[in-house]
Amino acid sequence: RIMHRHYTMRSYDNLWDESVNRRKTLILSLLGVAILVVYFYFAFTSKPFFAELLSIIGSFAVWEAADSILLERPRLRREHRNILQNIKQLIEFIDDDPNQTKTLNSEERPDEEPSDAESEASEEKLSQTDI
Image 1 (tube, rainbow, N blue to C red):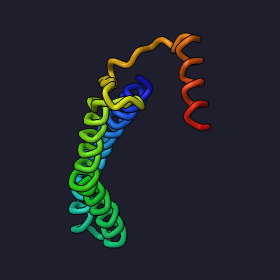
Image 2: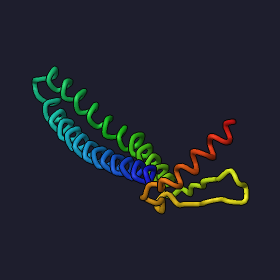
Image 3: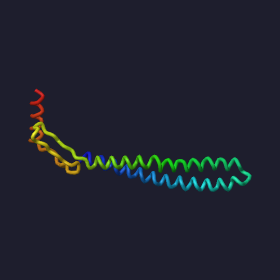
Image 4: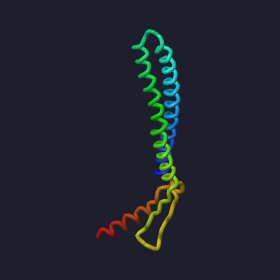
């Protein structure tokens, strides 16, 4: 259950990162295109220094948007797929007796703590194996 919660939280974090990436891409794209439109207006006027400054800023914004789309988004999606695989994984608890195997899905772990008799029995078993 702890692992399931951990990967569920990582999944939510990853979804948040994807939404931030989507907003960042949209804002940088629109800002870059708007600045480049202003650049083309000033390129034909008498302010070449200001126009070149706008060209650099607009190109940088568009480049960062492309970087978000082409590099960051596939990485975030790949991480999300890996997290979902970890949420659905099957965990096997193997006892010392090779004939007994307990298999639990990460969602099906018992919430209750072991009883005192079970914990004492397991402590005795551990102390016997150490001797």
